[in-house]
Image 1 (cartoon, rainbow, N blue to C red):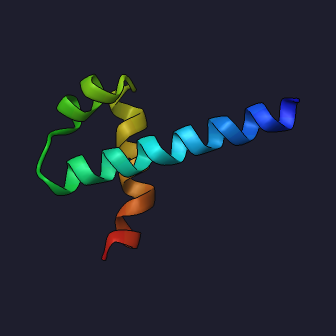
Image 2: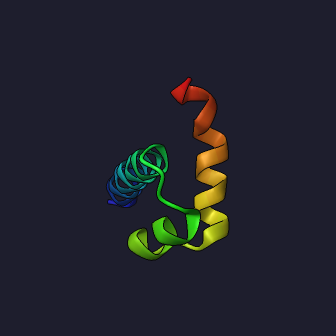
Length: 56
């Protein structure tokens, strides 16, 4: 059962990261993204830094 919960959480995190990157690409500020996805500014910045090279 724990593995299913971890998988589910991983999927949610991946979807949230995709949303964050789409918003970032459209010009939203990290503060705006943070408020909308209910993550700290630091968490949003980390996600953007990790995924930005993938967007190129």
